Length: 113
Length: 109
Image 1 (cartoon, rainbow over the protein chains, first blue to last red):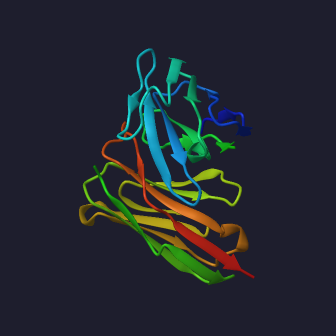
Image 2 (tube, one colour):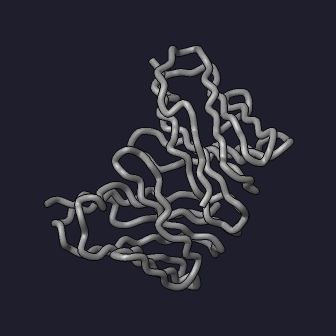
């Protein structure tokens, strides 16, 4: 299966700042998604990253807070904007070639202080 | 949207024991996967199993799509099996997948 590289792997950020997370896949994928995993919780889908157009956000997530880009079929970024301690989570990127089997990057562990 | 339930929420096993984890879902799906999240947070694909039965070593999975459940069997458990097991489902193979709450497994020597 394909490999997803995510960076940074972890970061500690000051409240009020923004962090951009990058996701690079080693081969083209049809679909890319961004998830959030809050401490001790399951994964929650933030949005579907659409190539060349605006991302599709799930209920409770908005573009102003989580802007997403996907300029091509192998790369996407998620920005966490104007961060607060409640944004401390693991953020994960996933890819899917359209055969249904999702695969994940190693995640970005974010702590906001 | 689809609701996903997993049971039990927590499980403690003695090394060498067998276990069965269950995933129930509220609507028909064409995509069902099992993942293991290890203690370092890495998500590992175990099975892509929208229907039928698959086996991989000590692990096997069965999905009965018509009855909206899937089972993950772990035999002869090892301490390295510890972590959280997630079931994730989607309406189509091209759709997003929704994760269940997970089963936290601890295997003790």
